[in-house]
Image (tube, rainbow, N blue to C red; front, side, top):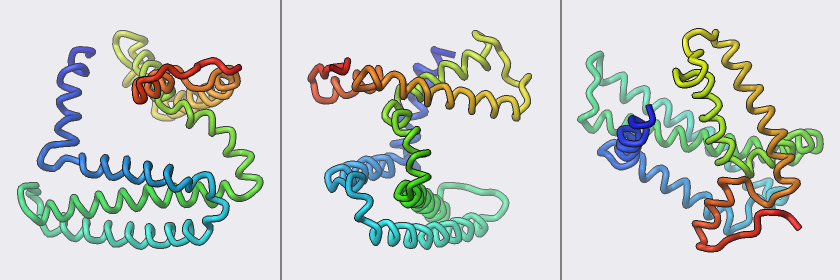
Length: 210
């Protein structure tokens, strides 16, 4: 399994990003949008950006509907034997990409709107440490999940009902939310976030809080 992930897995990811139907342009665009949001300090000034957030939600909803309609129309016209080596399929896949982009902006706009309100803000603030340790939590989820489900661990895949698997996932997330809050009360970054940040800027950042 480790060999497949180390070789075939990375090859598949490369194809997913940079093959003929790859999404590399889409991934790069999201990086640029994140950079723009950071440079303009949108998430610092989100309380004053009510009009922008509202426009974002409205236009993203319109683009989502249009994108889904265009994608459905494109793929429906291909008939039963769907082939992706034509311009119609390319148009359908592009429409799906646009719809996914719109859905992302809808999530952001709704989250920001909820966070402006007093009660949701207090509740959602509990997830802030979890988000600051997103990379560490993501990798840790993979380790826990494969340990529970894969053959080198407990091998429970196929034996657990979906309801139990869903319950375990919620439990893992709840524990990680608590752990992230505890960890960041003593440290400036999550373990992998610290490594990533230090390698990005070629500088060793202080890990422990003073």
